[in-house]
Image (cartoon, rainbow, N blue to C red; front, side, top):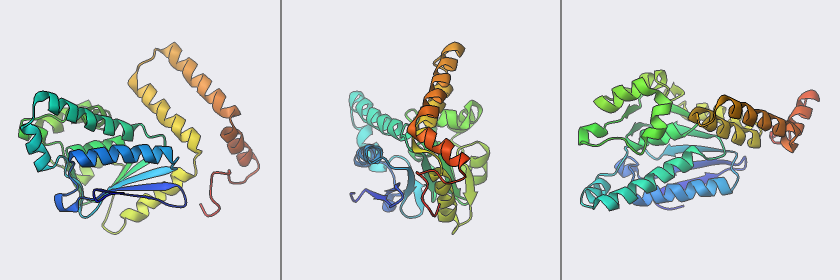
Length: 264
């Protein structure tokens, strides 16, 4: 799409979004945040079946660009607030994309890079990758990414790693739930493609509803009666929907549903 970002959508409907600032370890600046936001809108509008998010070069994302941080340090509080809101809105779009998302973590991720991972549904990292929530070492806090990182790694882990800024190796990232799996160099693409094949076997509308359901239940916004009503209505609607009918009939007839390609 631009020098900052690459978007490819293959013939399966799988979108790959690549951060393309390898010279600065794919660090964010205002322009990249805007490009990511617009790209997530495009992925949703195109009806992508799944999306892979990765980085060019040897890093996933180092978080905030030094020059960007310097310019924000010289800005007013109001300017900083507006800038942070744009970052938060971009992360929210990624978190709420209707299609399943996979972070292909090709290297180190710090700060906002960890936020991107936490907003994806699944994450696979190289076993050499390092992670960190190091904002406190700069006298800052991981504020905009916190609504996504804390549910991902849990309160106890958030207290530890947000307060200490300690680096996290890939094995520990799996233990705390930040990433799903780690793989040796050379096996990353194969593992990601295996996950994509699993995702493509699911009904796209059902997956979108699953994501919405997870957000709703996890938020705790509804009492038990309201939750029971909403979940009952959802499964009833899906059972009689075109996709639900196709899926059930395909199962009973021992064939693949229409959304599954012949070679899947």
